[in-house]
Image (cartoon, rainbow, N blue to C red; front, side):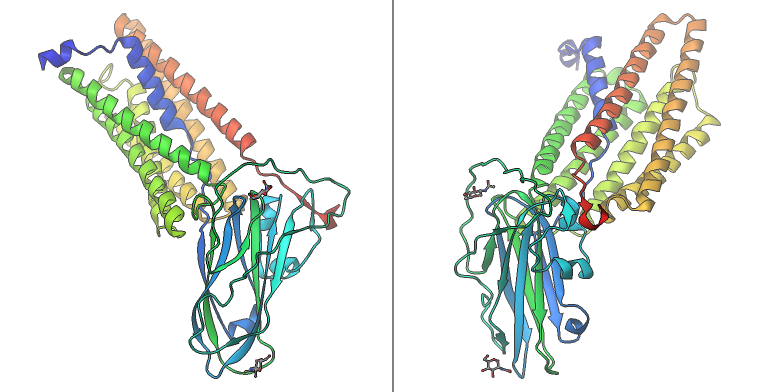
Length: 437
Ligand SMILES: *[C@@H]1O[C@H](CO)[C@@H](O)[C@H](O)[C@H]1NC(C)=O
Ligand SMILES: *[C@@H]1O[C@H](CO)[C@@H](O)[C@H](O)[C@H]1NC(C)=O
């Protein structure tokens, strides 16, 4: 061990930088992440078609992605003639493509005029000859042999749409299920219309819709996120290794709190790894792993709670001015549980409901208030601890706490800047509906 100790070249200033890094990484708020699937199964039968004829799918896709429809299964005896058609449209307004309901899908279907100002896009619509559904259909009956070119949507105002910059990417080669190819990087809506011309025959069919681009099934908006999570995972692994090395260096005077910091780093690593695995699953299978995102969110909530509790305990001066926490422990645990509860609810809501729903906004506000209270609590306890140290004239520990305070202030500022930056940068363009102006 002696050789190891002599080889420990971590000066106090480097340790401070490391500590700052840990705090910044831990205080980075999670990104908005509702992962878009790449593959859907559509089951339609004669009962359902009486209520609903339009089936919609939304996804952000790269240029030259392929939309495929595979005929999976049918239950058609006696045989029945089905009229099937689809409509593929690119939008500039994100919510135009994603805020669909059966009513809106019906209005959009076949439309060549945009419904929101500031929007523009292209569309393709394809109407099949009546398809006779009988037993043992071929799976690629819906394939389109010559892929059509998109038509420009009419915009109500004289507004020239920005032409997106051209980039070369490897083109996917069409397979035998392909029905269309995308023409730009954009959010798309894909609507399938199925009708059964007035017969009372019972039937049911099952189709598989998939959208595959140059990076397989992952959507264009999530590709950069996936890279981000990969980099974060690597950073956490490096941080974990560094922390282990440091702990080995100073193993003689390790405090219990330092084991817990190791635990926080490990949780962060696990959370990022689960997210990355989920991205990989979407990328290669087109389907999300049930519960993986929620699991990652819970891990992340536990990690953030643990980090806050540890900082509170350190700022109360545990092990420095107080040998034990005593009654304060209840308060610390209470604050931790409160924060854990709110952040689990917030995380689960964030991945399960759409942006802007009132329950989400309420939860965000409550969480932000709780977080600010925690920050206040930390700084008040820090001030008290430092006052005590000053009275006791303990210069070494006082300077330690001064560094700690600076690090915390830096981390708080960094995370506020980060929040402002992400809300500014990742705010998707809002478009007004034409009827509203
Ligand atoms: C379906 O249409 C084809 C031709 O359009 C016709 O020959 C056939 O009899 C029809 N089948 C049914 C079940 O109506
Ligand atoms: C999409 O890709 C095609 C074929 O590579 C190219 O001709 C077209 O210009 C691209 N569109 C955009 C908007 O970049």
